[in-house]
Length: 75
Image (cartoon, rainbow, N blue to C red; front, side, top):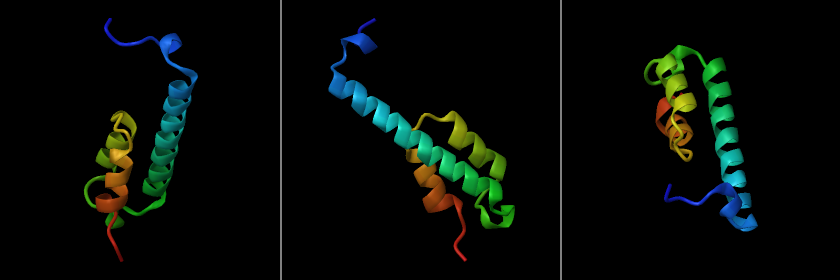
């Protein structure tokens, strides 16, 4: 294995990783909550596909951002 183990990382990098994971998790949760309560007529594309993209892909925030920018229809 060429990568570093968790124990080998400095406390600063561990903290940054945990903060990034928390932010991504929060972004996904907010996007999924919006997707669940929004009618299908206000979503571009099928809701199940957006739900799959938001939950499966570890995207560093790109899936939730794509949902907010492109997945929702404007009024």
